[in-house]
Length: 322
Picture 1: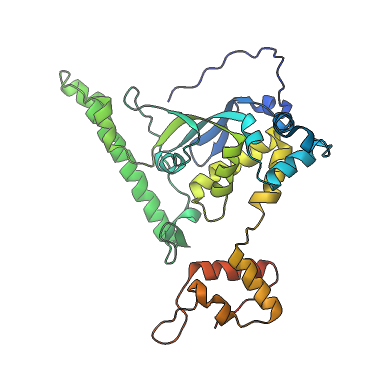
Picture 2: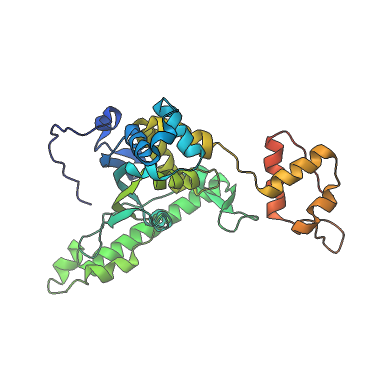
């Protein structure tokens, strides 16, 4: 893909982030051939504060410090001030990651087009430690890591398939030098059709622009330990190497109130209260459908019940359903 061209830096009267100015256009490597680069941005932590004080006026004057106000806003889910900050990124990523990523429909996206340009022979091969079997309990996740020999075999086969697919792509385009020499009058297939043979592990590229509120939602989902490794790798780089230096106060609040926080449902609170008062959990959980049993009398699996037990365990509350 063609290298992006950049205009020379010029002076500005707008509020800038010194940390982000230092890394403008710098490519942060992700996976084997991917990267993320900041192309432009608008606003800093001060823009969040400015927007909030316009919106809330007298009601926020008792919060003196910017950090305190930002923490108040995020803690109480006043999200619109965070929309005053925007960032535009250039991202190079595998096609299958892009198709998952595009589910975040709150961004403006402009993707490299294989209708107009020819794709490069860059494709993603997972490292051995990321080769895993299908999870037995999670329909969309990975389970145990494959043994080294099997993982190496998969890598070899993926590499061969990718190279063969690209060779066919070039042949269809009539870009194969030997074929062209043998049959110079042969016409190449249109790029928009030839691309159908490209596997989804090949790389694409796009500009991705969105506001900080929606970016934090992206981070909340995609930096989670249950997120797919490949998209998590991009999210982690963006969060820690780009966005945290840009808006450190907002990200500190995000880490406290969202990323590292825990949401308790009304049922979770009720169960915790029942444990504390010594109530019979079998009776308490019956209306939730948590106590359904198999023919042999054992409890049927229930995801919400299991999540409740895990969350309360983190709080030091032991919950046992029998």
